[in-house]
Image (tube, rainbow, N blue to C red; front, side, top):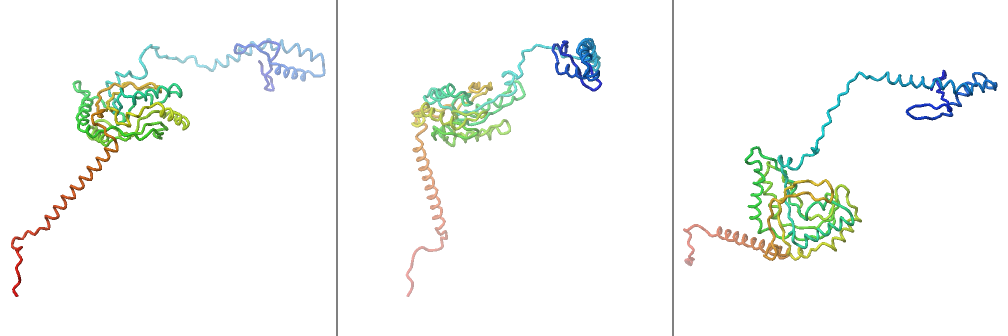
Length: 365
């Protein structure tokens, strides 16, 4: 390659040129060069034209190596080879980017409190069958990462206490607190009432089994928050559902939810729940490993399980009967209060002056 006085680059097609390891020809550049040489000597002179045809390739043949060398040297001259490069030593290590669970557990531990149907019940097993069918036919979703449950609390993170002898002091206190308060509230913890199978909208479109829990479950969480305030955070949950299918990363469309709804009606056995024959447990789980893969279950370690609703022992009477009993007790208490108030008012009307005679005498005529 050489530079012409008119700032045009001339290249020959007949002579191979090497640039970047490739060999090729430029017919357009050669034609332009031929025309310029012919115009310089006179395009009408056939002798000059033939001379140009033979001269141009030989000239470029001799110039090409020197031009390429000068071009490479001009680029290399601009580089600073006096600079020293220091590379960090290459060290092989098998240490993962995220600390392993046992190292995390030495700093803090995480817990959740669930209300779960008995794992031996048909209701529990039918939900697992439903999850397997959904996975096979429609793919994974986040509900498949948990056991069937109704959340009472969010994630409770308990940090380690300084000192070797009582580093998990508040973990022990939490378990003993639940032992005592569940025993106190158990008589008021009845079987959840079924509200139906429907599509929810929080935190994303989902298919849920609607439940209605007694106030005793909320009272337990309220006591927990009051006891451990300032020690670790305990978040309320709505306590009104058992999630069957949802995906916050990729929300489910309405047609898919309708198909899942029909599949759930065909698969899930709710007879035990309707007849109040389903046993329920309060379960304190420790979260060991969070699963980053949808449909792969989170790894929980069961800390303790409390049976709060028994089957066939009077626990969990029918919802209408229970509501009727509460209304009757409420009215009875109101009648008792009214009677006590009436007795107090009558006592205040009796005169207290002993000098007034209560014997009537006939007037003197």
